[in-house]
Image (cartoon, rainbow, N blue to C red):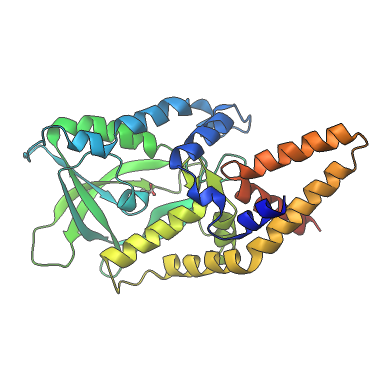
Length: 311
Ligand code: SIN
């Protein structure tokens, strides 16, 4: 148990090293079961969605004869996970920005980086100043022959509240190129999972720190986005993103070891109240298994935070 504890306490814990599909399969089982809380995701067959993701493996499709550019191609703009996770075939990729928006972690995630009972946080766009606010991201050109399959796939991937809209994209660095008309997915305030700014950065950071879902830990989403932004747009300032990264890193360094320790001790104390030794052994076994599964670290953190809030 101690060795396992030490493993969990490191920020690069065992869960980080698991292949991504372990998250997918594990959480698919959990959220495919009706939650009874009225959340949209419970209605879907997630396992079907995931096999669909696999059919869009870019590596395989890129090895087929490459489609050529035509007038009927479409461009898709990604500003969140689409920046660093392009699980669809594309024939061109440009970095750039759209005017008039602010990127914010104001959307609950119940199907990728959280589950209906414990939603994570992901980005959406808010209207901003059309002459001042830019959101940086990546535009992908999708061949006409693949656009309907790719849009179907993205409609499914972004189904939890995101709507398609069309606007102009500008390449970065700006070199006088004509703007490109792009499609992007935005979660507006009208969707059930819109969280808004009711919780300020420290609370959003806590939610990210303690959530995981079928696509993996919520913190991975945040860190991947921040790393991609640094790499693609060095020097560009995104205060909201940078504050969240700093806050979540602080939670991991300062709070995580204690929270995991408390949660484990609490669970173990409960188990030791059982009179039968055989029952104790079985429950300890179950606990170990639960903690080692994808999302086990976040489950413990969440339990400790809940206990802290109640005391
Ligand atoms: C996007 O990446 O453009 C949409 C939001 C997300 O899936 O993270």
